[in-house]
Image 1: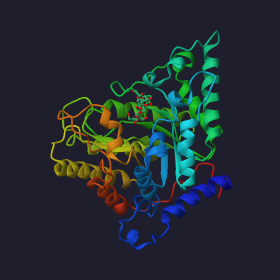
Image 2: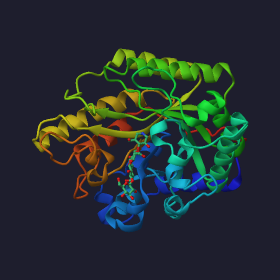
Image 3: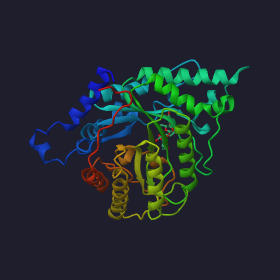
Image 4: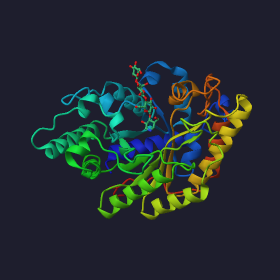
Length: 381
Ligand code: G3I
């Protein structure tokens, strides 16, 4: 591990552990990043560049609570790659610079969202020429090398995101896999290991504990087993953790958790020698009743139950929320509630006040067993 990377992480940990000084602060509840750090965990959130640029109230919450940030959209191909020739790091740089200035660590999402819906149009329609496999390899490896080199401080990369079809458990096809086969996935991990030798390398997906995710879980497990059997350099499974109501169905979704099957799945994953990362935690209240205290209590209860289970695994290294405030959650614009009311899926409400979910996260972190802090691959003492 290089000195600069070690000091970045040490700086983030030191900031997280710094004692509170003023009277106002001493009355405040312990920061989530401090509660996490005391257990060897990282706590953080996704954020977008607009919020960093122009939302000081949100920045205050991030600075108080988070030891790490991840770009919600800005390091995806659609954002970084206007075309086959160019890279545009403008928005992602805003978040990276902010994290660095605040002493926060940076996660990376994602080197390849291997899902045709989320490819840039130019890549979907790309002419791979007479030697398609070689051209696909060149494009992918070049992208991963350039992005990893631009953000050497990233301690954990979602190398591949969501390549398992949730309905069938089979691997998704894209223009890249049609050109070079499913070796595209292995190539991404091998290239990432070369380009970011000290970063944790993650496969990230939204298989979850609710009923209906059985094929998705089985498909992800098959993929991970294949990676390990082929010696692919993967360190962890990113468990996105968008829990709660289903998106497109009308079930409440708060009572369908298959805990036994979920533990069996996690046992298999850690049995492969992989760590677990909670990468995109939120609790969808789409089908909960209108009454806010009732809704918030149900969200907090489910969140606590889920985090207690996940944090009981000492292989769980981080809890990253997919946004800290309700007003900017990605869920507001998707799958609306029948009553059209704003949703309440994150730790802070629309007026930036902490909610029961914030208390539930704090309680789960406080109750979690201590574990060794994330050991970064390649770290040599
Ligand atoms: O920035 C453009 C804006 O210029 C344009 O006017 C507007 C019109 O629709 O679109 C804006 O871009 C949107 C972008 O979010 C920023 O708000 C895209 O349409 C929209 O598709 C995009 O959605 C993001 C989605 O991933 C797709 O990239 C969500 O914010 C983001 O939360 C979501 O995150 C995903 C993870 O990457 C993977 N796991 C699931 C998670 C939730 O879907």
